[in-house]
Image (cartoon, rainbow, N blue to C red; front, side, top):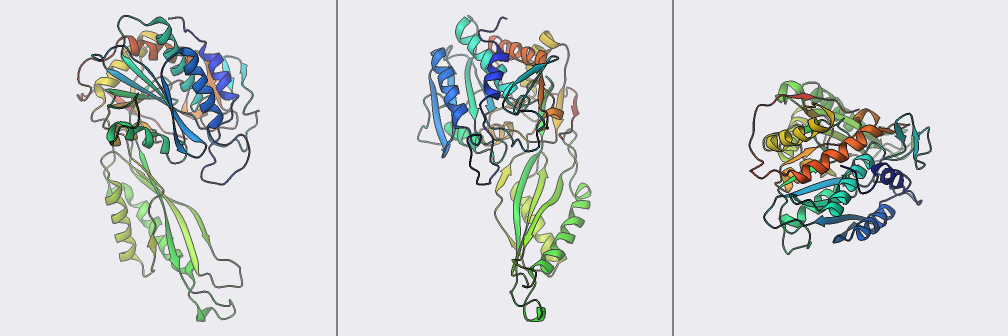
Length: 414
C-alpha cells in the first residue's frame, strides 16, 4: 500500500504545532492547549472531502472527528489518537522543530502520540482516496486532554451513550476501537487505571510560640501519611494481582500545608495516586481506604472527590479484535504479541464507559514517551500505517467479545 499522504510529512507537521497540556496549571503562551492542532486537523479532513465535526470539550480544547462511510452493513472501526502532549520543560532538543536523523524523528509528541496519529491519518487518507471495494466504516477521532484527565475521550464516548444525539457522525456505538499509543507494534489488551484525589486535615491556627492553643493540621496529616504508607506496603497482599498488569499501587505524591513557619497550620492536604487493576471498582477502592484510615488513626480528615477516575482496561472482551490485529501486524512486521501495561490510555474509557471492545496499538516505544529527547522509529511509523490500512480492508465481521487463551505478556511504563 502506497499512502495517499506521507505519514512522515504528516508527523513533521503535527510536531511543529505545539499542543502542550497545561496539566491543570494556569499557563499562558501559544504552546498550550490543542486549538491550533484542531484547526490543522479540520483543514486536513476538509481537504480530503470527508464529513468532520469539531466538538468543544472546554474553552480552547476540542475533539475533532471525521468519518469514512463505506456501507451501513459493515463494521465501524473507531480510531482514537490524542492531540495533546506533556510539557516540554527539561527537553534537550527543540521540542517543536521536527528533526530527522539516523532513522528517527525527534520532537515533542513524536512518540506520544503524534506518531500514532500521523499513521492513522495517513491510513485514513489512503482509504478515502482508494475507496477499496471491501472496507469498514472508519471514524477518526482526535481527542483532547488525554495526558491529564482524559476529558476528550469521556466526551466522545457520550456521543453514543447518551441522548439526545450529539453527533451526526458518531450517533451509534462503533463495533470496536483501536487507540494509538507507543506499543512497539504489539497489542495492549489490558492496562491499569488510576484514581487521584486529595486528603485534607483541618486544624486551628495560632501563634507558633503557644502551639498548645491551636491544632496542628500537619501533625494530623503525618499520622495519615504513615498509615497510607502501611496500606501501600500491604496492598499487594490485600488485592490479588492481575496476570498482565501486576498488583495495584498507592503513592502519596504531593503535600502542602501552613502559611508561615510562625503560625500553627490550620490546613494540610496531600494528593494520592492509586493505580487500579482490571476488576477493581473505584467506589469500593475509596471506601476501603477511608475505612482503613479511620480505623488506624485518630486524625480527623476529609476525603475530597477524585479529580481523576480512569478505569482499568480489561482483556475480557477484546481477544478476537487483538488476534485479528496481530494477524495484520505479522503480515507487515513479523510476529508480535498481546501485552498488558502499567500505564493508562483512552481505551479503557471506550471499553468501560462506551461498552466498545478496545485495544491499544501504535508505533514507537513507551520508553521514549515524555523524554528529554523524545523520538520515534520512522520504520515503525510506516509499518503502523500499513497495519491500520489493512484493518480497514479486512474488518472483523463477527462478535468481537469472545475471549481466548492466547498468550500475553506484561510491560512496564516509565
